[in-house]
Image (cartoon, rainbow over all chains, first blue to last red; front, side, top):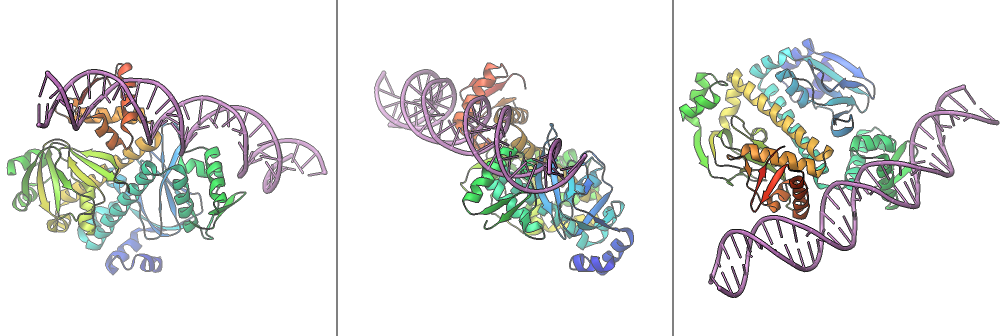
Length: 210
Length: 210
DNA sequence: TTTTTTTAGTAACATGTGTTACATAAATCC
DNA sequence: GGATTTATGTAACACATGTTACTAAAAAAA
């Protein structure tokens, strides 16, 4: 594990801290679609993402979802941090968007590291900073954009994150994540196809230009 | 200032830290409507809120606004924290909603305090936690609620924060903060009045039940 | 192969929200 | 007081999005 750590977090953490992480952390590989955190659960480990992508989702009272943002290599989940430290239940759901490699760090160490390692404090604050900005982008998107623009951004993100640059989702799945209906998604996708921006197929969508 | 500090932050910080804050911080009183932070500006002080309320706003490309949330007594601005530490421009605007009393702490001290005071770390992490949750509420509101429900929540918050429990805003001002149009607000307010929930007057709104 | 299920396309209509236009009343300015 | 500005009310209409219903093609199951 130490090699994975050095490759992905070596530029962030000093050797001593890397060593500590290596000692207490556990390495984990999860397949696509693996549920890492559920709403209402208590989180006791903090995930450091080595590779792959994780999607963070919010749920409304009717059980309908909304995609908040993606975590990628080098990221951690500030929401988890926040829950860990406050000993509160998770407000979000985390599911692997692709297969992913993670290092799971037990939360007990975090207070200690925050006191002792400047690089750790930097990392934690940077994580919060990034996550707040992701949340702002999400708010911008929902509040200021129309559904066709949101959809286009969504497709761009999905294609970037997927290995082959192709969006492997049904219209129904897209509708769930954007919190709209399947018919609306189909309608707007067809418009985007007519504009030459995408190419529709069963179970996948090719992105031609964004 | 030390008395204000003890009253409002005494339960959070140890005496030594309170003393440090007292030494480097400056006390500030601002009237209602005072712009504390502008979008794109670099923030060099962190505000600790003693009394009053501050509204945090986001702006779109057309210059239209959206109210994100309010800061109240005992809060600080995590967004500011985030900007300070990252040396990045502010992504939000902060304007006093009521007259407010603040202690302004220069950011240079923050790294030092984060290393030395457990209570400070706790405070900073709690601030991030609270702000992330406020952002989630904002997202819930925009993504899952219809405008009439959002309006009702908005009126509730405004009334709670104002001294006399009355919403002192024109329909146009409300429309700006909810990112909709004046006509829509007038229409929905009239509906709420017909339902007996509020009472409309020129320049102010009485809340009867929420 | 035949049947069933999943996915996508589309029409027709309902509803919420945004826009334009105009009227009226209250407040403010000369 | 009379004129002007500001705040609100309301109608009529436009448009984006949500809903229901039905069809057809593709994939999976039998």
